[in-house]
Amino acid sequence: MLNFFRDSETERRGVPSDLNSVAEVPNTATCHPQSHIVFLKTHKTASSTVLNILYRYGESRNLTFALPVGQAMHLFYPKLFESRFVEGFSSGRVKEFHIMCNHMRFRKAEVAKMMPEDTFYFSIIRHPVTIMESGFNYFKAMPAFSNSRSLEDFLNNTNHYNDSAPWSFLAHNNLAFDFGFDHNVTADAEDHEDKAKRAVAAIERDFHLILVSEYFDESMILLKHVLCWSLEDVVSFKLNIRSNRTRHQISPNTAEKIKRWNALDWSLYLHFNATFWQKVDSVVGREQMKSEVSQLRELQVKLANTCLKGGGAVDPSQVKDAALKPFQAGTAVIQGYNLKPDLDNQTRKQCQRLITPELQYTLHLKSLQFPVQQTQVKRMVPP
Image 1 (cartoon, one colour):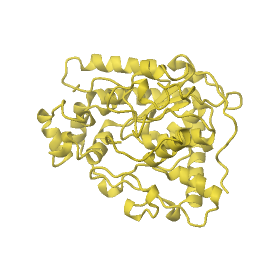
Image 2 (tube, rainbow, N blue to C red):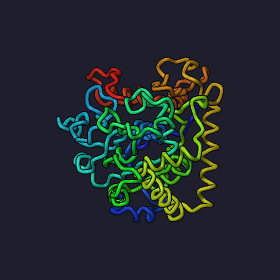
Image 3 (cartoon, helix red, strand yellow):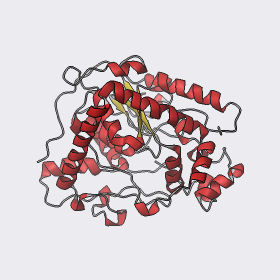
């Protein structure tokens, strides 16, 4: 039987009041696990895997999630977040929220109305070129992309881009949009640099940590340290991942076009990729990071050998349990997993937590927190 979930009562610790003081987080021998957490779930950044980590951590400790009201599967994205979007807040039914991690368009003042002062805020970013390549496939049905034969075709005809079309932000500085900023900025805009500086300053003010998708394992080790969690708390299987056959190589010329079109996202990425490694150096250290990443990957392999039939992800048509099939979107082929058939009940439960897709896990948590309410999947807007 697996034993990587701890079901002890949750301990709490204070969160540094400024971003730089994250470097002063004490080691795990003296710190206490953080349980008040806001994760800004950005698009196409491996954020679904982070969500699963937070879901598992909170569920195993009976923490309360700030879940979308009613049948919504996210916090009414793309609207700027309002506290009334959270089930149980306006009614006063929920007295304390521990974790907020569903898709939203960030607005700190509204989030702060419902989360405690010691809440730890973090998010994750990804290189804009890979976000754009992934997003074009995943959101192909959206108006911004639907008339383009290819990503190159879209980039060559951005003069036809309609920023008032539904979901247009998915095609232009989507990271900046998720953080709550104006996304209609290109490298040619006169105020591009000024808007980038203001966006960076706002994120540094509102968030304690920004992780980087390209260094996912390193990000999880850094998160482990600043939250005072264990290695078992941050282990995961990749979720909402595409089959390799729907991935496309991007030429250097196309990559440059993407960076100019998404100039604000590119500025954010350059800045927070640099600060990420500064945090690694000050909180963990490079040698310790290498050692812990190796341990994390060994644990992932161990869990895959224990839990997964075939040891890895499979195309959705091969997922045997319909309840574990991931949501499909656009031209992307989103993979899922099959569990080994001979697992004991406790091990199966723990393994299933690791592979449960976002929509199904959200419904499961809603049924736990609000058992008298009907919770059925009703796709209101793209997840």
